[in-house]
Length: 310
Image (tube, rainbow, N blue to C red; front, side, top):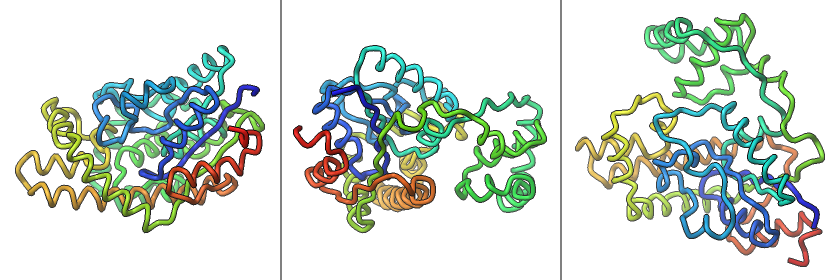
């Protein structure tokens, strides 16, 4: 089989990592991470990163390679992923890019502009404005100059709201305009994509069950270790789903059962946001709608006739 590039996206707990591993083992492909939390080595449990045993079954790249104190942007991931993809293709191997971060896939397939550097004074002023104005007024001001960013950025995402304003304040051009000027790292025709979109209620049940399993696997200890490092709360790793909830338990503010319930609720909300984003931004990607692993594989094979013999 000629070397291929497959992209597998999906919401949290949808089974995309298992599907990617099965595909990699069947084709001899290497796996590249496209999940913004699974890049952090400090979040193996809470990010549901592949286990060491799973990582040993096929080459994995950009999983657990970044320290939580080092906040990565989409641009940094794209540069790292592009270098890894070039290395894999240089070896004549196929690639499976898998994850739940839609912006990573968008950057890979549509491009990401090299946005000019923003000075520390502008960043500090944006942060001060946010704290003074509050999210609603700050978002409203941003919406006057960059309505696409104001509408796109999720509620409570202070970091991205400030970033969008910083770029406009520093350059006079909306961040959304800058992002439209990039060239894709993967040109049209060079990749095949699929998005997992299982039934919502079944997905939510799996989210809840996985959160309980995470506690048994050491999620609370993982969060306690993060808190012990006294990291900046604005770092991406500190905003991972479950960190805030279990941190409240570690500090003695809420019982464990309440922390688990809150984390389950946030996980379901996150899965809903991911699915909504995929419907809007990946509308043309073929869908795998099953949740059971074997049925997912059968649906995937039906979309990839060249794999029917596997």
